[in-house]
Image (cartoon, rainbow, N blue to C red; front, side, top):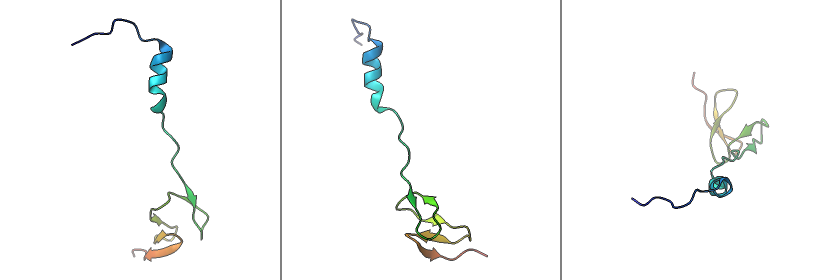
Length: 62
């Protein structure tokens, strides 16, 4: 297996790793309650029911 002839500098190594950082997840404000929620996902409200785009899609379990 070939080996490198020159040492990779810190600058070149770090430039290669520049795309490895994590970005913050996208959030949206829910219309009815004002909570921060992930977009395009159903979420559980405070009453236990599930909501999507401000509309209730399933009732709370008893």
